[in-house]
Length: 89
Image 1 (cartoon, rainbow, N blue to C red):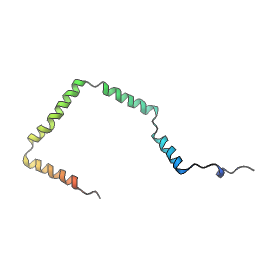
Image 2: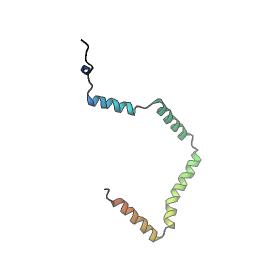
Image 3: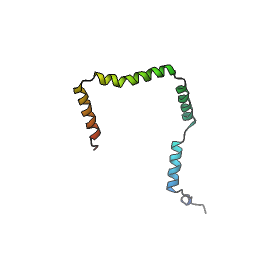
């Protein structure tokens, strides 16, 4: 008598879910190649250009604050406070 297909050993739901997640998150060789390319691009950045960008970033906030009027600073602070205390629905 032939065996029924429903008699096959079924996997535990948790085991099946674990394998599905593992397969979905498994890195492919293409993903690994992209990561290596990104790392190599970071290493080839011009350090002088990075230093200049850093200097501009340091000056930016102070220069903006110096240009703002007291009224505008107050408006910005009120907007920020409302955003912090806003209740999410």
